[in-house]
Image (cartoon, rainbow, N blue to C red; front, side, top):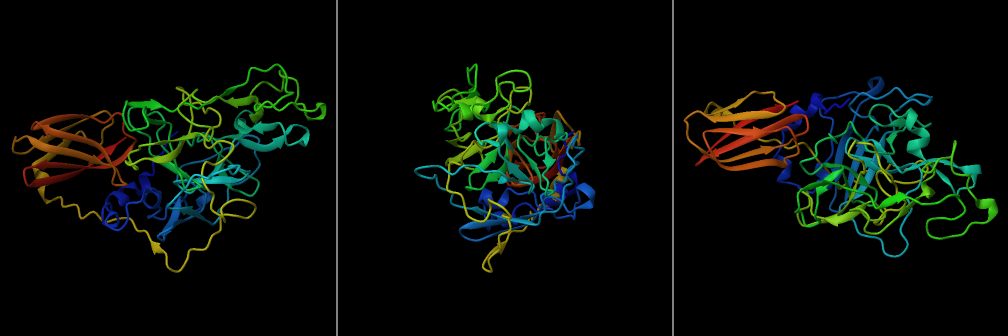
Length: 412
């Protein structure tokens, strides 16, 4: 079941351009800010409450409760609770030279709705040896809800894998949106991206470079380390099938699109000059694929204050600026010049001018101010395929000479 913040998306649309004149950094503007007192599980305030920024960092204040329905969690006795987080995200992420920082237990990043991202581990290892670490999906997946998340003992609701209710992972024809940020400051995208790193080649499913090892016993590690007998893992099969442990996987350079951290340097819609970016990995049936979000290590330098016990409670500095949802100033006086139907719609819409004159341009923009569709030199009656768009509210702007008309389009 997918829900797309219909409770506050309209309010965001009505306020879409003013702060883009102030700041256009996606690390500041990509968050799902709760502007309507939206509540989620058990009546708790949902999504992101505030975004503040300085010249160097972004401070994301959130509850760790999403705005969509969550639960139940079969066999998981924990209850989601407001975590009162304030995560700090650098605006100038840099790759880390030398030994990379491991993605430890607990939150390793934050989704754009303020919910925590966990790595592939489930905090349990074979015989508590810390060598053969259980993969969360096969070992805890039965307790995931329909959105593929569940609460930790401290009440921290989180996802180890693709957050299927946060975005539409079945849209395969457009670049996936930013759905989170890792604690090294690099963005995390959904599963689909440009085939080529320079932003060309069409849209394709991002494939991981990891695969299950061709092993018949658990006596070695993927890097070739030969273990002592006391470090062996359990025999493969029965209750210990291949894939139960993350050490059952190996990274093969060039196997997929992504590196060992589950990312790559590439052009994206939000970063037309290029950036390093992580991608969630799924297969063609939307089933999560290891390592799911970020690999065993971050690619970049990890900011202090976000990771480790009792972390995620940074203090917003006094010189920070509060990011507010921009105000569009959309003038609908000229809307009689434009007829858009059917509306709401889910596959096709028709755009007709009132004076039977052709249009020089039609632009469809989402609630974050991103252009999702642009048409040039259209006729007085244009047909637009919107089937690939995520459900929500969009701004349609048409241009005819010096005249501009605007209309809201609801996609369901």
